[in-house]
Every structure is written in C-alpha cells, then in structure tokens.
Image (cartoon, rainbow, N blue to C red; front, side, top):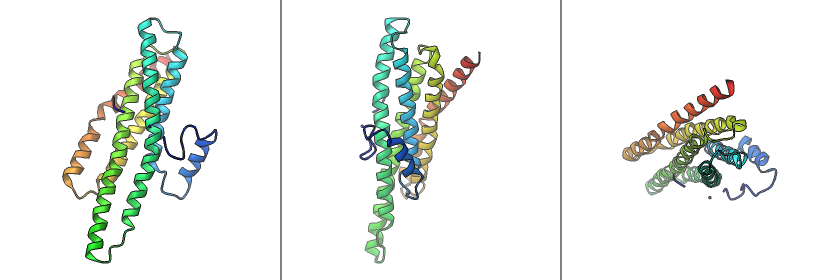
Length: 219
C-alpha cells in the first residue's frame, strides 16, 4: 500500500469543519472543487473502515482476526489523514494552474514563460488525483480484507466504505483526465492515462464488495 491534512481544514479545526468546508465547496470560488470532493470521498471511506474496526474489536473469532482488525485500523487512519491532506493540496494545485493562466503574454518571451508555467502547473495538478487513486484503491483493499471478519451489525458500513472509495476512484480519474488533456507532452499524457488504468481492478473490486454486502443485508 502507498501512503498527512489541509492547512486550514484539518480534522482538528473544530466541530463545524465539515459544514464550513461544504460552504466553501458551494461558493463561487473554484477551489475547493471536484478534486477536493473526491479526496473527501476517500477520507469518508477510510473513516468508515476505522469505525467498523472499532465496533468489531473484542468480537472477533480468533486472535488472528483481532490482529487483522488492529492493523487495518492503523492503516485506515493513515489513509484518512492522507486523503485530508490531498483535499488541501488539490485546491493549492488548482490555484497554481489559475495563476499560471493569468500570467501576461504580451511579448513572445512572456508567452513562452506562461506556456511553460501552465504546463508545469497542469502536471503537478494531475499528480494530486493520481495519489488519491492510490489511497482510494487502498481503502477498497481494506474493505475486502475485513468483509468476512467485520461485526455483522456493521457490514453494511463496509459496503458504504467501498462505495465511497469507488466514487473517489472515478472522480480522481476524471480530475487526472481534465489536467492531462491540456498537456502538450503526449508522452506525459500517455503516462498519466496508463497510471489511471492501473486502478480499474480496484473499481471492479469495490463494485463486487458493494454487491456482496447488498446480498448479505438482503438475505
């Protein structure tokens, strides 16, 4: 698995953090936007995995299952923290893209500098959702790991965690694409596309987990 919170919107910012963050998302400001929302999907998925681990603690069938839940809890906490960080980084990366596009281009030299700055900013902006894809895929992996061990009373939350991670995967892929499309370097575009494609299996696995949970809760 691959694997820190936004400067002004950390989990410790206070009880109204989520509400104030949603107010910012709903505002006319372009950041935070879809990339930060995608990161929040992954953070919620990881948090739900943590919740399931807490509510399964002391109810496992073996020491091995107890250890699985303990290690999963630690990993999920790290993933949630990383997703929070990426929400902030996405907004910062988008602001950098906007600033680059606003650079003057009256003279040929200014135009060249502007183009270079835009291309650099777009590439950096694409890396944030790519890291998010890693986080979301790891959340799916945790869901699969605990599905058969989780407290049956909260197995539905494992499904919701997987669904949240799946949303992060799809949204993250979209955000990579929107940045890659404007890159002049075709090799870089192809590389980004290939890295996104590597997470197709995670999306399929998330769908399978959701379907399995739906069958169990409907039985």
